[in-house]
Length: 157
Image (cartoon, rainbow, N blue to C red; front, side, top):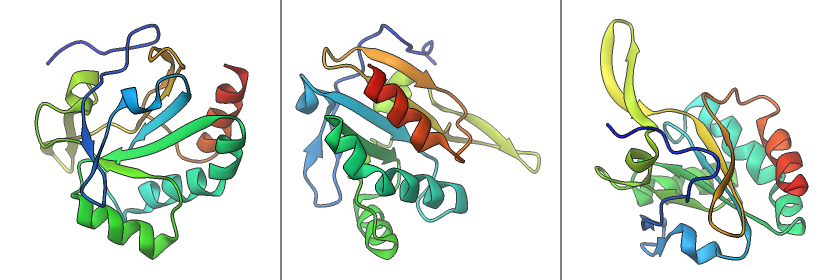
């Protein structure tokens, strides 16, 4: 596994799939601030709360000139269902099965639960400046209050 990419590094410009089958990548937001939050799985309690929190503040992010993108490895159809079920307004994207953005960032990592080890997404958020470089990273995110904290940092950038 490669080392972690952090503040000051360029955010990987790799395509991810949108729920409608299109694609999105960091370069699409060049010249704008961008928040990319990676979460483990659609429709799980923490991930649902995180997506709802970012959706609730989506208009505030937009007003501050900040694009927001939620990313997991769930398939595009599952993202569409998840967004519809919870009324999410934040755009979602699917990271590639292998060799994707989360692999490049070093956040697709070995996890363990109940003595079982498996590969999974580490809940991580990136604030990317208009120049495509990472301005701030939140690792192992605790969901409560996180979206508000990211909005404040994005406004200050």
